[in-house]
Length: 457
Ligand code: PNW
Image (tube, rainbow, N blue to C red; front, side, top):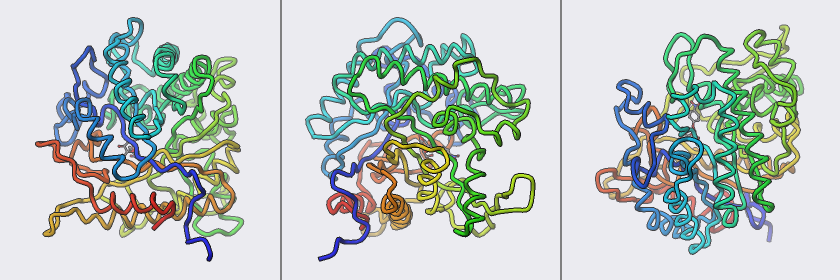
């Protein structure tokens, strides 16, 4: 009998992902202090719905039933993040044991259910106190303070955790956190003078990543270390050699790639990035790029959409092709459905950025306009359609020899969707925020079956 289509190799790691500020709640409990997201969300006008993460999914108290529910779906890998201000309420210095104890309880619970943790040290919730002290990522000091925080966490939890990620989506907490001329959409929400300020913040974050990798390796010898990045994917309009070459070239300076994945994986800022950014390029000190390009064991690729590119007769040799008005989208303004980005992202990371280690999909998912049907169920067929289409493209990459070893759906459950508040739902599990009752959607049942058959069903 032939292998059923879209089968993944034995041991493929099927998982689900979340992040601390989006689900934990318990914002002022057991010594936690405000992060920039607490402050930002409580500033009128910043979150469209006026909501914040004070309570969120109250996962701080409900983690046991959440883990049990995850296990009941067959999910064997859980990606979550640690809240910096639970561990170091002053941002630096004194360690808060009660904060560490929460994550020990969570890790013990995961262990009890046979679920392996994939831990992100930083998913955007930096200490407000460091923003007040020196402007957080706008200062080089932040890179050192992040590494010191990483050391504290890894020393305390390194016996329980093997798979570590330094940071989530450097592009989002820098490019979307600082704005030129107008307030940006993400925390800290600061208006800065120039784009150089923003690229400098990106550079400080990347330095923090590199120093963080060193801290993890120093205190956890078995660590599998990664960066999680929403690498911007350039999809060739056709697979002609000319369009593919155009997409490959464009990849090196698409959105944040020139400041994030390219320096992390090649130890250099690409020529195209330096030429395009000119005076806005980051100022780099001797030795920085060596730190930023520490060898990584794994690369976490977050993928939601992509940008179409074709060959063009201009100085760069390519042009991006804007999406037509009627292009299909999910339930967020930026969430165009571009499944081919799943394949091309991995291919560019291997062929253009030259990454030779293991890949995992650290996030893939969508917001959908979910509702309870007359049958009392959430028949989110649109989410199933989206996830199935992307998974088939991830599978294509694997079939062409790209070492993809895991997939984490975003998200385990509906949660605080940043500047969209709770209005946008990304979960495969519905959350009713009034009662904190969790209800698996049809996509959860579908995902569970993918896991059971170890293939895209
Ligand atoms: C990611 N964009 O954020 C984050 O890692 C998650 O915390 C988040 O909930 C999820 O994706 C869904 O948004 C992104 O504007 C935020 O392109 C914005 C964008 C992409 C990713």
